[in-house]
Length: 448
Image (cartoon, rainbow, N blue to C red; front, side, top):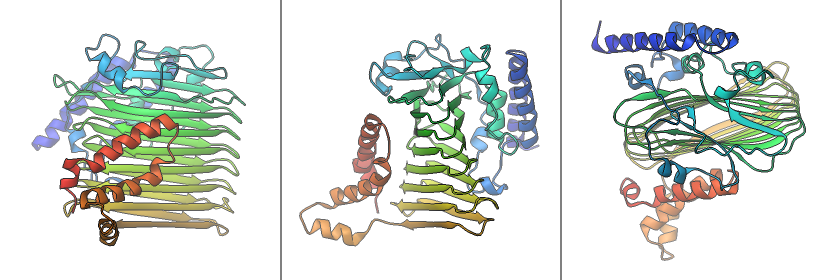
């Protein structure tokens, strides 16, 4: 047995031991879900580059990492003021904060408006109304995704949000996952978010991942969203982990009849990042919009895998992902649109555009259509290019120096995605961060 295989074998053994300690906790229905998920994870094992969906993403840093479960909770030592400075929203914001995967009452503000319930899954697991039991694991697919199975096996805490039928929540609800990232121990957390939008409800959810320390850690997150008939839900994910972080995030959305769901995903931090999105338009007339932005430098790797499954007729989807890659960074975009046999009158469009700022940067893009119906309107496309030198020359001829011209070009490239992000305060903060990245001296030194 090679050294890498020995390391991974030991890690799997340690995982099983940690799971055995967890498996005896919680209600019976949760123990059954965990046990089933752990069995499936051990059958699947960590994915390898021999698998088509992981061809360009090597997760050996995770499989051989030996990460131990983060303890988290209020007793965790970290700079609480530093964390508080990074939290979104004002003093009146609805905010659920988790430190290393565990709910932090000190940083949270649980004051949801009428028509909404917001709290910790860990605190609600045993509730008599059965709201968590009714939905946990119903949308997330453990059968073919090892990391989803692993998250489900170790699920203990995360955010639970439920919007009542007909309720209109006009303030955003923030979910913040903070990883302390201390160098003392390489840890893993498995945050789980469960969001239920009742029929004809409306709401905006912002999910943010933040890293405090400089140490290496692994975040394995799963978010399940159920969008009821006629509901309108906006969802924004901000991945701003530390430079050494490993992040795997899986989003599962199931939409009802005439519902509308929009997602804005940004990936800026992290050493190795994988985002999986699965949207099932399971009601006639459902509509979804996916927007994504990834900005990479140094040796960062970001992999975006999306699947939009049109299962019912008269559905529509729009997908627009953009990436900027510099240094020796690598990116992957694999976007699939599936139109089922009975999903007639589907209207779907997909686009992926990339700017390469360095001869060593690399992107692998693979937009895909699988159409089983015959009365549809679908299109897809991908582009890879460099900054337009004619546009740079035009701006320089009007007195703008070359560095500023390049920065403006990159910012304009990003702005199509940034302007779609809601709420406004999140868009403004993220816009400043993106602008700083594309105009900073370090960044500009990597531009071709």
